[in-house]
Amino acid sequence: MAKRTSKPAGQFDPQELLEFLRLDELDYPAGAQKFGKDALPLLGDLVNGSDENLAIKAAYLAGYIDEDGSTEILEKAADKGSAPVRIAAAYGARMKKPEIAEAILNKSLDDMDPSVVKFALRSASSLKLEKKLKPKIDKISKSFHEKDILEEAKGILIKMK
View 1: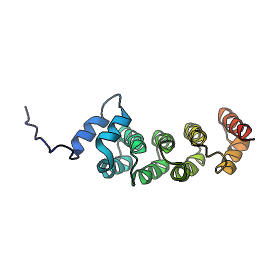
View 2: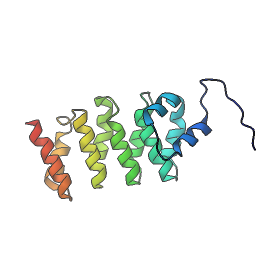
View 3: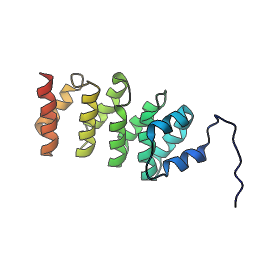
View 4: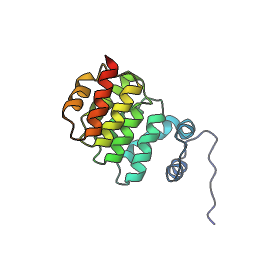
């Protein structure tokens, strides 16, 4: 059995973060509190990495970390090729201040994947960003290729009136 080296209390342990992210069910708020801003460089690497499962979980966790640097991770995730990672970015935006989330949601609302757009619409509503994002929501309500998303966007516009 390999001997584990102990780390000083409060010091970031990348291996511990990786073990956390490999769990089946994660408590993201607790993980954010435990790992904090020290985890952001590794989370950024994971979002850009080839392991989609870790990239998704890293993006979700970054959304819960209220520190400089987490926004950039979500912006990169919103541009990532994988739809599940882009969904994580759209969802993670709702954990940010509205002025920060707006840039992420601008990207997510331009996405062609219905799930990404659905989460972006819901995040925009929860953050009360409908007015700032109205041109994009209006465009979605008129021309999106999936009926459910069209209806959701129309519903947001109706609530705004």
